[in-house]
Image (cartoon, helix red, strand yellow):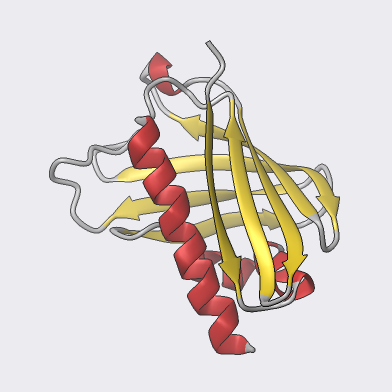
Length: 155
């Protein structure tokens, strides 16, 4: 069964600014990790066909076991499509021994101008079954809130 998770938010910044925050290593490292985690990028190649490797570390791993280790999620992300300033398509593969986290999840970030900034919609398809849908959608919403705080403070 193919599952799709989704979240969206209006951010008070132009689409080009929001798009840029997804293609800048320091920016992405600062805002992508959802609440309760921190992120570190190990490899960075921001072009179609390129990608990055991110290590997400739980600040408190009790009750939130990681996919890669007790305290971490390691994910290899490829840039499948980059359409400035409209869309970023990523293909994410988690490093995990548990087969319920196997497979390639596609994350599409769509940026639509609004009267007050940019509506950002994130759609995740082919989500591995080991990822709880409610937790995943809350994590996406948390990352969007972090993105909003990050780019709105910069504007």
